[in-house]
Length: 458
Image 1 (spheres, helix red, strand yellow):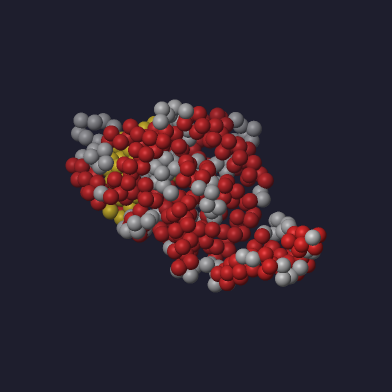
Image 2: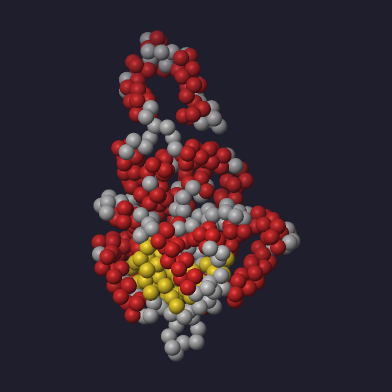
């Protein structure tokens, strides 16, 4: 029997796929991305060589993951910071709760971080009476709407300018005819108040730098800089896979991430944080913590086949290339990480019993693998997930006998000719709604097969 998440997935996929407004908005926003990325790709002298090098560095790092993580901890601690190791999401939330209670934190500003979405930080902070405000414009918009990020890089991709205008009108009484620039300035003014009042700032980390004991954060709005400059406490939450060996590697990874994520040569603000402010420094947090999160990542790491999935730099390129994602949308996945990368890692992070159905959300076209900046064979990994799902018995019990029966009858033309077109149409009608889909008309079978008709002519 299908699990509730699979049933909901199918309902949402059917609904969103035929939502014309949604498709129009996504086509428009994706179109801008494609144009920017195509232009950005031309900046490379040898883009394939850059992909090879990035892939090699990430593979090397994974082979020596524990060593580089320990090196980071040693160097970051020497810089005056504190490293906390969180095996689960609950561990990470418990650390943050303790820090906030010890320091009487009541308000937090957050820079965009999918890792904090993964541990449902906003919801957990609300439970202990701490206000958490998203400061990335896209995240701020979806937070006002009471929604989750739609996309790894562009959280509000599913919203048009008119949608945002209606949202700002509802919350702030802002005119519906406001321009994008005016709405941005309003958000800037509202967020500036939050920055000034915040007791703590929380960021993610695009990269964790082992040899410097630092984290690297790249952004386009300055929200991470503001979130770390005003508050007295800074917390960065990063998956253990985010580590890279050297500060010098940023020369490759920063532009590589920007090119594949937004098409830019490099994002507007790229910062390195190596600890709390020193005695001779007038600005910066008094305390800085880095929480290194496992939360199922070692489940992936210990499998030789899937370890490569931890190479991901969260650029979102695979989502933008995926025909399934573009049709069913980000929310249909009902996971923190959507699209091909989410399809690969979510069952391992959150359990096959709940997310095995994501394996079917793939046509195996390999578009994702062809654009991945670190050369992950995502389509092959999805196929491996399907294999594990079958072995684990997570698909419907009738699926195998039905496929076996279909294979038997279609292997030989003489078998398919045993029944006429009327019987075939009857069977197609019975199965069509559930198998073919209620929105599509199943092709009609002729009364006689081509083979029989041709034979009768001779």
